[in-house]
Image 1 (cartoon, rainbow, N blue to C red):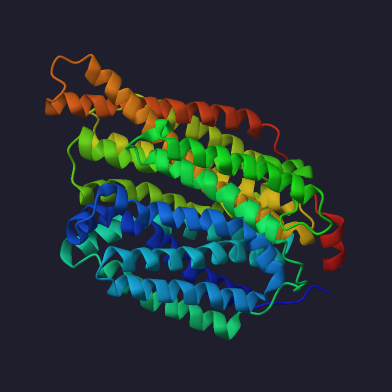
Image 2 (image 1 turned 135 degrees about the horizontal axis):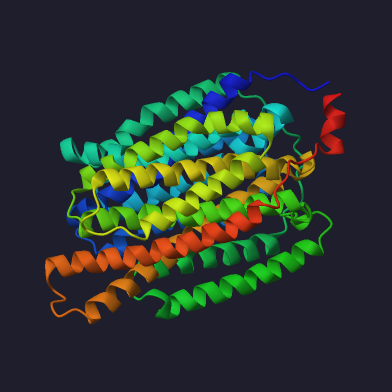
Length: 478
């Protein structure tokens, strides 16, 4: 007989904490220009507030499978939310860059522990036929919270100061912690596997090196020609190969690569990586186009992008319910078609494109991603036996970060290359209208690249089918 949990209260505690963490991840991005002036730092130094956050996630998330088996659910939840609370408090009080950077790392540690815990807990406490709806709510938070970060952050900076991004977050985190302390139970078995230090080291160098390398390339200063970028990615890839070989030869691996024996898991993970790559590409390029290409303010840009982000979040629970009822194919394939069509239209944007046109395309883009994300992720994880849940969620969350870093770096590179090519052939390269046209030309190239990724994903989408309930889970439910 499967144990009954107060699923609603548990999910509320997890989602409040996760939402605030995700909000903090992006809200600071809109404050970077302000922080450069306040702390008298260079743009490259300020970028570390984002790069450092992503790097910490890239290092910590691969270890989440091990941590989920080493510590109880409650201990991990309390540890992750306390790390978020302390980091947020230090950030709110920060009076120099070093203090804020330390706070960001503490916040990233909290999110690196909390995100895998959310997915793993949902897999354990919800039966297979209700998981889509629950994952839809999780996706709502994961999409809307970071999407609203720049808009809310912009409003707080406009009328108060950047500190209030964190003062706004702090009481919500405390509420999430208190609900979790009251209702969250220990839902997984603590097996305390032996910690293999070499696996931890190879994982840290491997995933950390790749994420750091792509993040540095995405900063756009030296790009792919930088020795730091090339060295980081090469060393990271070598370490990852060694890490995978070691996991194959261990009786109890830190990350069980057996998850890749399940075809629906592999398809789901690749679709999620594609969505993350497209999402991060458009998230970084579209605001730049709206500000440089059409001359709109930061606040107006945030407001333009808000409807699509909010609407995609609102439909996530409905997408989850439809997945529970009909399976993944009838959501994923139409979602990929919508995504491809929207990206094709995005390849036509110019400085004269209307605001209504951009809002409509962004709404279509985010709805397309919403129709893919929850079904692909839930269907993939459903195929795994329960003992592989921690490993499946660890791989999926880690590779999302890698996909995000790759998407950002490639988008910046394509944008810069397109702009340089346009301005090189221009008779007045310093003219404001020509810079706007160059931005449009570079942006069109980025969206063309994203459309090719969407088309390849669409081909993959035709192979998706509903995961069959595995025998281990069926035996626990009857």
